[in-house]
Image 1 (cartoon, rainbow, N blue to C red):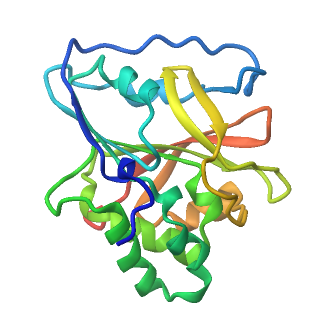
Image 2: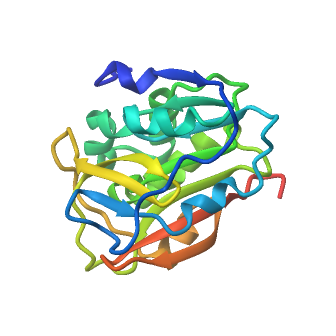
Amino acid sequence: MNHASADSRVQRVASGKSGPGSGRGQGADVTSSGSKSAKLFGDLFRNIDPDKRLRVLEIGRAHSETVNFFSSYKCRLRFADLYSNTNLIEGQARHSEAELSVGFRKALDIPRDEKFDLLLLWDIMQYLSASSIRALCGALEPHLHSKSKAHGFGVHSILTPCERAEYSVIGLTEFRMKKGHQADFQYLPHPQAELSGLLTVFKIERALLMGDGSVEMLLGAKPYWD
């Protein structure tokens, strides 16, 4: 599999005192400094066991802010940069769902027995076709357990504009945003109601419409055993 950067296979283990990163974002959803406020993200951490290692998967590049945030937790952090996999995403229309499923498994490159407590999906679903979303869910399913949670962004309407951005976690209430390092992918917006039907292994537990038209979502695992 052609990984666009070494970041797509980074694994970091942060062990330290358990506790939340400081959240600084208040006010507008997107600020002039290139940050985005988070209203629901902190809910992911409400029932975290401080004595148990937290296993986190981020669909994106490794950024120092995110690593620093999770260093406040006893944590294993894995990055899988699907945004760098231009061959897979730009060519998704040419492949069957079965072929896409194989492609996402290779791109994620997750050990067979590894499962995650938290997944940071960002806005990846808005650049994937319906078949790709189902294929990605299928590739993630073996790495979920019944209490796995995920966070991501959707859109309220197909008219909601979106620009490819990279995200990093500043705190419980703030994300940093900067322009994506790859050329813009085709924008394939899926409104919340449509996306809910495509997320075969997740259920949208909470959703909040943001001022910029995006929808912040908290997802819970809905694996086959449910």
